Amino acid sequence: MRKWVPALIPALVAGLFNNQANAGEINIKATIPQINTAEYHRPYVAIWIEKPDQSVEKNLAAWYSQKKAANGDEGNKWLKDLRQWWRKSGREQSLPIDGVSGATRPVGEQSLTFTEGKAPLGTLPPGQYNIAVEAAREKGGREIVRVPFTWPVQKAEQVKAAGQQELGDIIIDLKP
Amino acid sequence: MKKMLALVSLALGMSAPGAQAHGFWIMPSSTVLSATQFVTFDAATSTEPFQIDHRPLAIDGLVILAPDGSQMTPVNVLKGELRTVFDAKFDKKGTYRVELVRSGFRASWKDSDNKPKRFMGTAEALAKEVPADAKDLNISETESRLENYITLGKPSALKPSNKGLELVASTHPNDLVTGEPVELTFLVDGKPTADVEVAIVRGQIRYRNNPEEQSYKTDKNGKIKVTFDQAGMYWLDADFKDGHVSNKIAKERTLSYVLTLEVLPQ
Image (cartoon, rainbow over all chains, first blue to last red; front, top):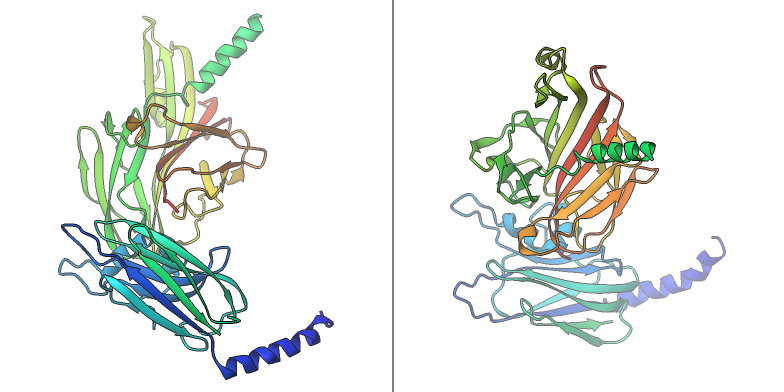
């Protein structure tokens, strides 16, 4: 124990200064595809950072209806349809989640930027992660897309993946 | 050879209740909730799990246990020709247990004309009902437990009652997804018990040729390991027999446990 702690300190110190110099940044461009259907509802979407074991590290966004319907239904009622997110994190949260919960978004590219040290990203321990994007649509389907990345970011890079049905391109721009 | 035949007939006799034609079940409209809402239930006995094709289930004695330990009464109870319906509103965070626990004594015998007779009820009623000259009299005590679980928000821990046959799952019963193995431990009066026979069947058998029923027997630690390959509603039925009767009028005790499980896709 004693031996490796001092060895680690320079790295930690370096990390500290590195962070101060310029905070890492994650930019996510998530495309909600145009879907031709008689009755279209905007999808519920959750975006989070998960560890390789698929446990949730950080919630980044949850877009759902927060209105109370005339019949007394809450928008929360359908949050369980974001099945993985609900099971792995949503149900543990007190809703709405500060800085994460938001209204549903329209068709098109949705751009989100998360900065190290600032909520909801805050600090992320070094390691391998996925950005997970899950979408579920009323009278439609459900889909989850995962994009792997490594933190901290060494040099600016782009990683991407694409959904088949309920999600379009998911483009992640990482900045050191 | 004679001994062998006796053993075979004994074995057949033992397996008869497990192979009964009609299973019983309660089927919820939802098991995982993210907001306060009503859930509606069907309850029936039928030839195939969740297929409404035989008789309604009597739900006298049904208990809905809220996460805080309080009890909830079902509403809009309807007993139809083929199934019983009831609703309940779930508004407390955590896991609810819907349970139907039944117990009694079952007798079968032949009367003086060699006609088979049956009776089911309390030990006292049974003593009155069965004639003194009953032939081939067989009396057993039965204890059955039927359960559904419904969770609003985060699942809460479940406590067995430590009475009769029960199940403890390594994964919360409202937390099952395809491909993730789950370890099920069967308890008899609170103790993990070997040789409990368990059958697990996915619903909607009507739409496939092979019922795909899975059979298991608990190991010495009372455990079985199950992986659900497909999403859907599953019917779990466990059976066990022992000699721990509450009234010596019966020779053996027949225990059964039935649970409806919803398995979600990944």
